[in-house]
Length: 143
Image 1 (spheres, rainbow, N blue to C red):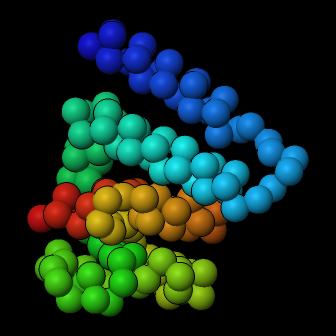
Image 2 (image 1 turned 120 degrees about the vertical axis):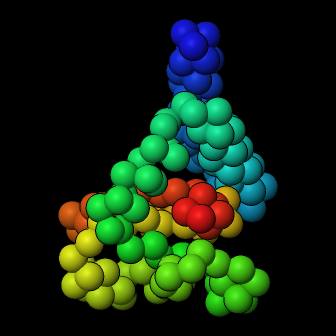
Image 3 (image 1 turned 90 degrees about the vertical axis):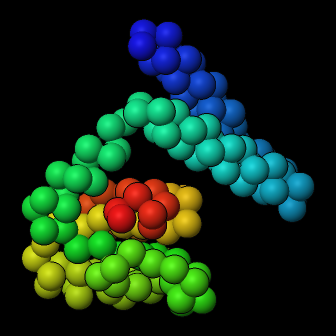
C-alpha cells in the first residue's frame, strides 16, 4: 500500500509541474497539448481511484445513506441512453444557472457523468457555493 501512495504522490508532483508550465506564445498546438496533459492527469488519477485510492465507493454509499440527490451532468442524449434510477439531469453547461435550484434541494449531492471528468468540473464549481457535493465518477457507480 505504501508503494501505491508513493507512486501516486510522484505522479501528482510530475503532473502538477507539467500542467503549471506557462506558454508565453499561445497557439492552437500549445493549447491542444495542455488540454491533452490535463486529460491525462484526470485519467491517471481516476485510474488510481479505481483501485481504492480515494475510497470513492465508500463515500458514495455514505452520501446515499444520507439521502443525497444524484445529478447527472451529461448531455440529454447520453442520459437517454442510460442513467441511474431517480437521477436528475442537469447538464454541465447549465450548472451555473442551476445553483439556486440545487441549493433549494437542501440535500447532499452526488454528481455523475460518463467518466467523472465533467462531474469533477461541476463539483469544483458547486463547492464554491457551499454545496455538500461529491464526484462519483461514472453514472453506474451509484447503481
